[in-house]
Length: 367
Image 1 (cartoon, rainbow, N blue to C red):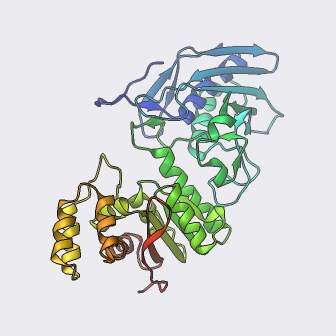
Image 2: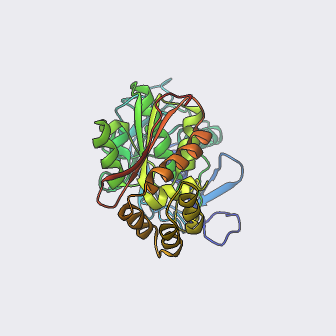
Image 3: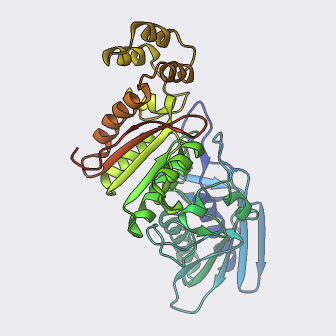
């Protein structure tokens, strides 16, 4: 596959939506009598073009199929190297372009997503890219745009188990995603997309209390603490900023923010990206926080010299000093400043064993 990429240290790739648009355009060209374009060039949503080499092609009767192998560049994308196969078939005159899920592509079953329940999980921008490619070919061939577009990803149902699709109510496979057509390495756009869609689904079904957690251990603790349904759980990971900023624009009545001591310690110090490669816990500052709240001098000295955040937590607990509560309170201040005043916010600190060791709550949105 070829295509112009902006210069970067890490190689960029293409979204499943871009791959599907390319395959659909080439398949429709063959169906309309122009043959399979290979390579096939598409226009990207934000300008520029990309070209793709076909991995498969087949023309049989009233349908044509083309496939592209997805190249995610240097991004650790679950769909890297998967086959995006698109079949374009003639439909009834006046039917227009319709979209359908083939094997490995999911179907939406819950409200709140960008696509209504019952529809194939092919997002709006990929749909538009496909329509535009078909329109370009239709004009060249003098053909009608009355076609059924079916997208399949072999093995997609298994790959989807490694995504958040099940929690979002997308069953049967993967989603066809992409707002720019380009995958930026380590941007984790698919994860952030899933966070946003999880909030959308929860709001659409009327859930008043969500829990956003940094990992599975803290998620289980938050769920048990409040008896929350699975649909109320947001797998936030390290993206505290992406979660809280989206909630500012799309608020819910209550949010429990749960995570480990080190992760929430970084949030308490103002970091919104909690990944170890992009933020670090300032342990001397954390020792200073303890000192400012009356910690014994011996404990403050031990905290300042601790090797790890977990050692700091153990030292504070051994001294019966509520360091985790202080971290929760400071993290709550940062989170409320980002999420805004409409969300009543609680922060819960969880240890590695899954026990709640620190908490700061205030269920009045103005508190």
